Image (tube, rainbow, N blue to C red; front, side):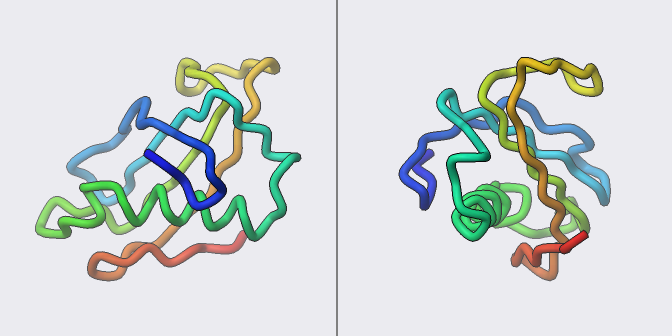
Length: 103
């Protein structure tokens, strides 16, 4: 999918589907978080949250919290890999809208 920044990303993995807390793991082959301004990165992450079918379609199986990650390559969840560049953002879901949770 095309991101607001112009990059392309694909959904690599969904963790926790059917629960209140879901992790959406996306990959963009040329992702470099240091190359994006913070507002542009947040726009991309919000777009990924907002355009995921679990959030967009709502319903009884919609999560209440979503963590979106964007990485430059696929990696195994929970295993540290220093070669992977990635960023994370957390969102609260209200109806079908992603609301950013600033840490």
